[in-house]
Structure formats: structure tokens, C-alpha cells
Length: 185
Image 1 (cartoon, rainbow, N blue to C red):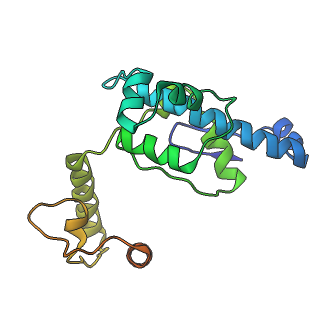
Image 2 (cartoon, one colour):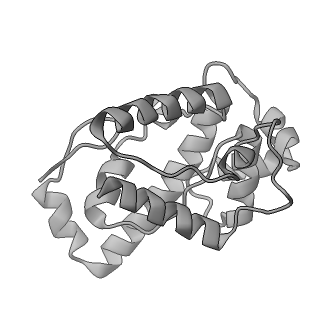
């Protein structure tokens, strides 16, 4: 079975699949890989070109001590909290994605633990607007259409529009997801 994750092809090998049939091995393997991936990614993000932060720099940006950053970058440290990961995400100005996935998706994602595969760019409104415009022109040429919502621009920080005090809540996310699904059919 061949999967194409963002970092390239990944082939499942029968040896690891045989090992994964053992419940205890599978669970330990998953926990070890997740801890390692998170630890290595925090370090890769901190050291990536354009940032080159020390552990002290990252600690200052997320209101933690350097020793906490050191522990988070240790793959053998197993006491990560969602709150700590959210604070790290904010320090890097990146979204955090925590989701349950199928093994066929998870294995290729965990496969690339190289620093270059873990580096991510912080929020950049210009980059997102270019992507949006590119997708809109692609949608227009293919006949897809998504109805604009009056509050959409205010959610991405457009200073010319006001948000009227409304947050982006659960119903907004569900509606946005439903609009996306309808546009894709």
C-alpha cells in the first residue's frame, strides 16, 4: 500500500505490520512515536532558519522556564499536556492539530522525523490571502462556488470590517465545514 504524505511516499512493510498486530507493542509504539515526534518538532521549529531560538527564547515567548522546554524536547518525557502544547503553538504562531486518525494515515506521518520535514512557517496573512485568491480563481474556472459570509473577513483580522463581538464557535465551525463539503460536491 502506497501513501503520499506531504513529505513523500511511504511504503508499509510487512514486518512492522506483523509487530503491530500485538496490542501491547502497538500501543507502546504509538505512544513512543507521538512523544518523539512532538519533542523533535518543537526543537526543529525552535532551531529552524529564520528563528534560531534558544530554549530560553522559546521559554520567554510562552511564559515557561527553560527547564520545561528542555523536558518538552526530551522524547522520553511523557507528561505533555494539551495546555503546554497550545502555549508552544502560540509562541511559534502556529495552529495545533490534535486529531485521531487511522493507522494508514498515521504511519506515513510519523515516518518523517527529520528537522526539514517538521519545520513550519508561522502565520502570514499575505501568504493565506494569495492561497485564497489562487483557490478562488481555480474554483471560478472549475464552476465551484462558495457563498461568502459577512463575518468571514473579520475572522482573519481584516481591520476594515468589524466582528460585531461574535466569536468563531462550534456552530460556525460546523457551518463552515458543511459549506466546504457542499462546495466540493
